Length: 566
Image 1: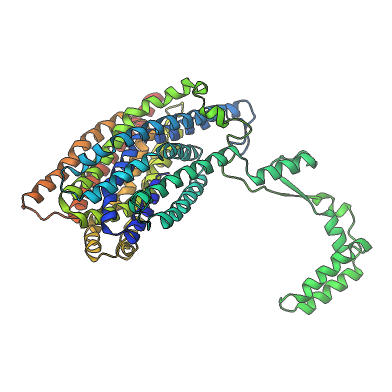
Image 2: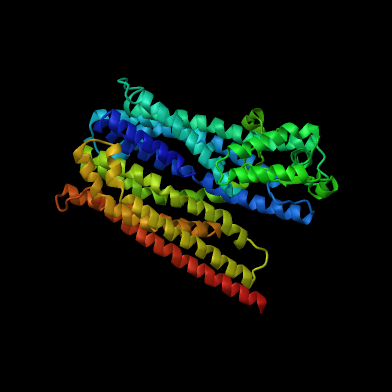
């Protein structure tokens, strides 16, 4: 889910840097900070959807078990709570995205001026950045709906569907960049062209997702049609039954009807490159000549062979059969208010958390735009685009933890088994987080070779390489950080996260502003590398706090289990 917007922005950064030059690429630094980092203000929709969908799926499965109507695929049966939650989430996403897009478009100039902090920026760069923000605002409704749908897929433990959507959006965005960015028009070329390509890809991805959710897979339809026309002797309708009796009788018998089948088989054996093929063919002819035809009784027990049907992703066609139509989707009167109210508790904590997370990114962009100049702005945009495409690989770990941890945490009985299962689950996510961090560190070491695909300016490339140590340390710990944060969210420890990110919201920008003032005063030579080194220290502190808090919650859970047993 988190890869969609960063991948689109990275494609924009590369296309603009190679096809339009350093000035247009520098304009993306404040513009992308306003659009992409500002978009995290609506991240409460994604967190709430993942948690609520996961809880709804669990409740539907429990209800199905109690009525003895569940089967191996938990989403193949009636899922009233999951369906209601998903349709409500998609409707709310359209409303939230429309409001956010309108606010972003109206306040784009003000936000850019606040971010830049002074009038020293080249007017050409500022105008290009403003056009980018205004155009990107048109795609915000689609962006929020896509993000919500992807979060719902994760809540259903379906990781394939979001990847399909991301691939479709990336292809559309790439083609749009190739066509529009080289144009000389200020409104449709350069940074503006990249913005139009991104907006087009977002709406195309929305249409793709709408069809994905409301249309069943071809394999499901074939299975349904086959099972409705063939008898399956009481077997599951989801299985495809293949009758092999006739083929076996024709191949091994002596009937005239099967002569062509036997001749084709012999021709196949004689033309193969298997060793000793002549001996095999001879033995087969001898066997055919002397062997009695196989009776029907000998194959009666194997008359039908069951071949399992290839399963579609769990979200494919989940809202088919009229569960969600365009008219129903756009009608506000059909919004389930009771379900919509369940999203409310996530708004303030998750928004506060998101603001705390983006405050550091925005502060770095502010320092680069107001203090370091055009080359550092372009270098920061390149390194930040790469960073935003690497970080989501472990940001997704937080979403996955929010899907799995609640199933353990919300168990009815606070037993010792529950406490141990919680410890094991969190420990598994920690282990995965460490592994992902090591992989990301390796990828960071490849940035020098990747930078040439973003710009040909040697000064910009030198500034990019200076930021690698700080980026490497940050991403090395990012897996552990996301595992801890996702586990805390899965345990509904929202108040703690809200308070900590409220502190970070002020602390991290304060450190960045201190770098700015020291640079302006000539006390310290500040560059992109200095900013990222400072930011990596914040990551060390944050990761440590998250896991200390998890250890405290684990001790509390184990103590509660012991008290219940006593």
